[in-house]
Length: 179
Image (cartoon, rainbow, N blue to C red; front, side, top):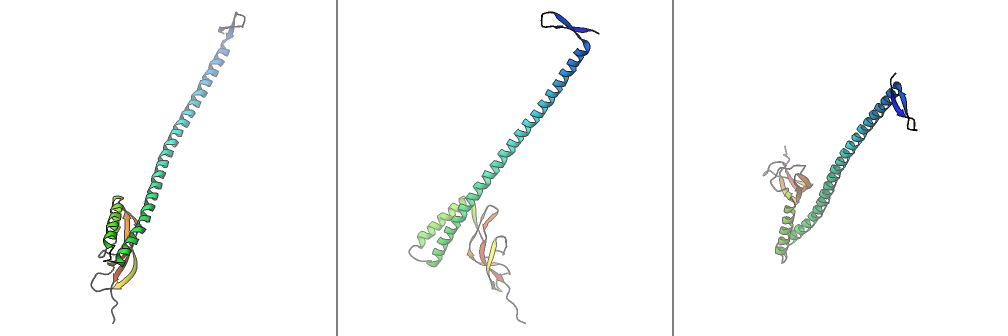
């Protein structure tokens, strides 16, 4: 068997048998395979961690957007209560000394709501829609079609396609016919 020279520590070369050399090569190959496998596992963990971080960032951004939208909508809902109060005051004294001032304030409030994307819903003449209207009363009428909005008790508002508050309305109904 051929052997390779190796140092005995004293400077002299000692021949190493071929089977030991083969064992060392197999051992080295085995270590390389283990290191390659470990590198692949670490690379996989790294890629998964990056993906998890990216998903976390996206979830966090969506959560922040959701909370901002909820806060914004709550402020707008609070603003609607003030609009209702000014409208009630205008109905109480339609020609009083403060009417013009209150009308100007209401116009300004509606302008602020419009800039925020809020629009009124519920007008007389519309067909009743339970998604957009809350019927608070029904009146018999031969003059208008059944289930038509006759009067708006409290305006409704929508933000984009989303109903913030349905309109409270009085709805027409067909009079009952006496036989």
